[in-house]
Length: 237
Image (cartoon, rainbow, N blue to C red; front, side, top):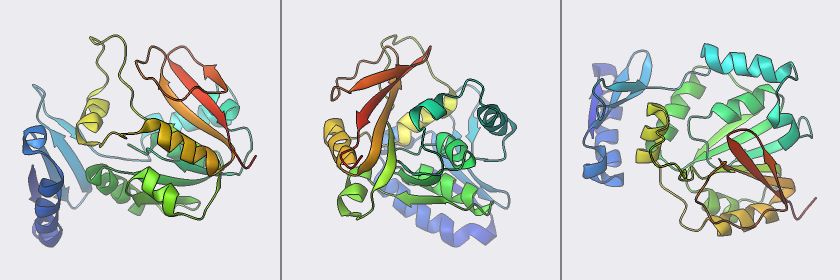
């Protein structure tokens, strides 16, 4: 993985060059690079005919249109999934932080955990640009975080990025890149069971409608056209 930077980011560039290339298999990241500049941090994926430049911007028009729609009460799946307003919520698989940012904007006290160092870098860069309350982010493994934390959350939210049944169906360049640089949870059921113990209300596990996953059986499922949200009652509810 290549790291490009201006002179002001030289120290960070040298650190990332060693750290990220120790983390990842070169065969996976040979066409990926990180660009550090005065405007922020971008991940460049050159696996496509036209390289994709990926960054996180919580002021993005599309994200904020979704927030307005949810706050209006129309087509709001999150209100069904997380009915107790102003509660605490742990997002175990933050990714690009899109769901967490929407939930935070709806009034939830959100904590994100992300295991990919590149995604954590992009998330931290995005958060630094905004002065956000009720929004925390940690880098690391969610199971380890829950194991060592004394905190309990009203809701715990998990998205394992399950494989879809239709293998010829490609997701967006952003999501395909996320799959390249993320570390999959080896024991999904163990994380779900631990999350249940640490939840005051419920655990929500998101997966595509035609997922190939074989996870712990939920108490029930809330469905949309494309997604299933598996619901598990928290032990402390």
